[in-house]
Image (tube, rainbow, N blue to C red; front, side):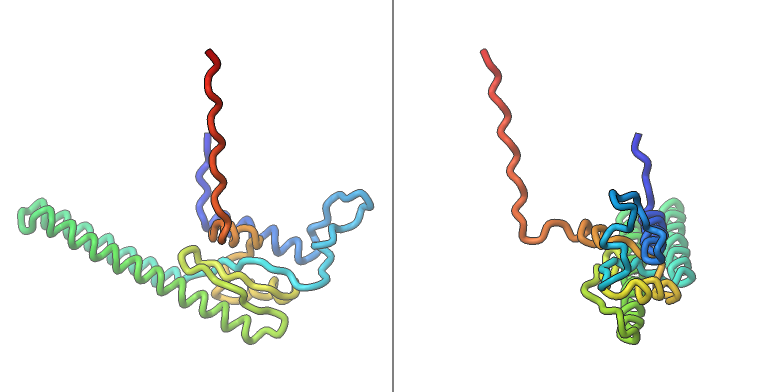
Length: 183
């Protein structure tokens, strides 16, 4: 049975692990008993930052959407509007809700970018508006320091950012032909 994990939960879990590894808690058993080379704290690290949107503004937009949805349903049931008009009202309200969410994500991404500009050992490499992720490179201290920003919800591994982008320029592998049945 598959367990559904919300994006928020995934970002939180990834952030805790990334922060712990940058803080020196990422020692794993290696043959020589030391830390893996990429956990040594030396050199820049690349991670994705999960942005935190203004929850109060998002809740207000969701409540407005639910109110319009309820109003459309009630007006339809009372015979004041037909089904198409009700659908149009709901579709328009849903579009406005999505616009609000995109704007809140963009505001949070802008906040992370502004934080990075003001931090010497941190730079923004890329961002993904749809998923609210910003790819950054910097020192472990600078990356962990982003958690103090109101615009940062979590730190996740770089692989998560690359996974949402999918393969870039790589052709999809062709499926192997099925063997013909033997007579």
